[in-house]
Image (cartoon, rainbow, N blue to C red; front, side, top):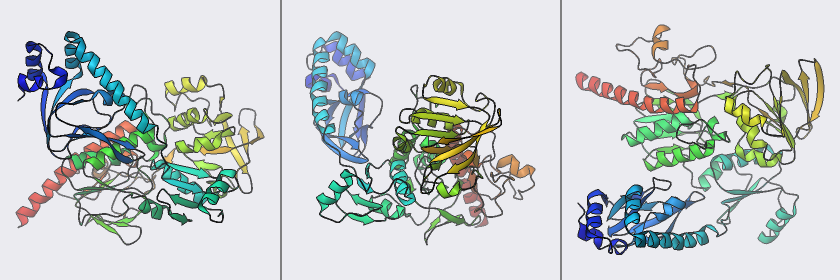
Length: 551
């Protein structure tokens, strides 16, 4: 418990009247921190702190790497900088007092000296931090490769989706020539990756590059309480709640955390973000949260199969994840278009979905998007800041039935965005890459050819669940049945009722877009991910009870 003498021993507060010192001692939080415990996390709620004992480390993450910016010793304050920059403050074995923002304003109203000293300190420390942030941050990877090389494109998407900074050099440019000259090596066409430590990897496989960059690709534990297949919003939410509630938790993701939502340029209607949030930022925050709480996140690993009885997960290769329960959060994949020559140009100007990083390659181009949902609208808004023109091709007579009103209004306000209704792509053209498309205007019943710098497809989605064992029930479109749907289908033969998100195989749950449900939203996926963990707890407790009774 704080005393007024302890508060008064802090130089900043030493000149306060006794009544104010007493009030601070009564109202400020007295935090006793263990080594490694944070006083405030990066991006956490603003507050003013004072160190009473021990010391506090100031850290900030730059490009995925945590850097120490300094230390705070007894008698010093901190917290003025998080308001401006959002640094984190882990402690050793220490004791600090936390003063809420409104409490600080009350003190500042009484003592102008406190307000002036805090402001001066903030300016001083911000100046120091600006010098740190102004340091040129070297990219973690320099990638050399042709724009239309599918292997190079896959590497670029992997790096962007996993938020690893990289520089991309086209082989036939002066930048690439300077790059090879500086290394005193003959030029290579690529794809070639040079890491920050100087290592050069020719034609790297995505997983090999992930390992070299320190990303986790193999399980560390012998067994887990819950294994989550899929790292989209539902899977990450399940990881956060599972790890926070003490379950040994692992997530298996074949590409990058975030799923389809991770490619959204801006999610405007997600609760708690009044200015909206990008999909990759949302995914990054969830990933950091899950890791901090102890969840393991595997990337670049596909699931070859699961055993619905033992709950073993067989990964591509030889690794096996052993778990007491499973959560299917694999999401959905964009529906494929049956157009002659389309598949030949995938990654060479034709794309299903669109990562935010694709926008820079459309600079000055005329690009086309197929789709009428929010994903297509968000991508159109993002591309409009780079492309010369963006045309949204819509099969139906209106956007109103499938796109949020706010997004329709934003599209209308963009002078280089056009919505072409009752239209569809009939053919694609190009040898080494996409050059033009034929569009059928169904109103005029006319086909016209257009030069095209990129074609992005956002037309619904399919649940790719063919790999699941036959005893996990699905509907005709592949969506996984859970809860009452399993029971109504006559596919549940166990002594208890299935839990709400439980599949026809006991102990295996499904959440998010892969589950049969009329609602497909990021918020609902997050909610289902957290709910799935509640049912996992019930399932595990019931299994333990059964085991005790049998023994």
